[in-house]
Image (cartoon, rainbow, N blue to C red; front, side, top):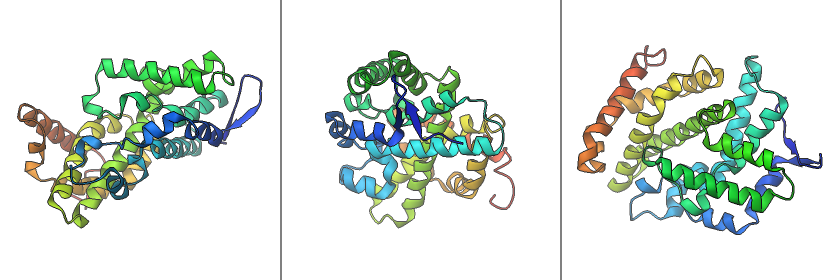
Length: 276
């Protein structure tokens, strides 16, 4: 069973939704809600609200964490169905709670694109996350729990951190495919271009790492199988001039990254067959 609560330092069961509500009632929620995700790709003539309407809840910084919670729940449930999960109940609870708090630090730093995030960005984000966790949850959850949450959110080397990193990558691909799917119905050239740019960037960064863990994580294999046709379409029909959106000195590197991702996808179990 996937748990739906975590115990506080007094042993009281705290539903995960309550964690979400605590943040929603804080001033940090307003800061985060005002900053849409993937804003780097948003055309100047498209408002943040329109951007979110086009691409869905994951582009709303606050709703993104609720969506990530659902993805984490799905991930754990699929693992249990496959009898491959190696997590105990406490670890599952930390992973689920992490999904609801992992971007709290972005109330200060804003959302920074995956390929632009530096070590300095990550240090600042984890510092701010620890600060907000202590302020909002310090009276209910021990420092040990808060440290576990911060480590899981931002350390890819730990057991839970590496797993959470993969869950986040599934979320990135979900938005990538939303953008690619919205492109044909967008009437404005700037919006069509933005959707293609976002999709090319995310696919180039996320497909190889996800393919690398399909044996380790059955939920990733199932997810990629379910969206196989849409990813095939993206790689087949991405405009070659989409990389002109990048600064001139980065275009060649970005095009190569996308081409390399396309190659490993085509050579994988998903890129063969009628969709190609």
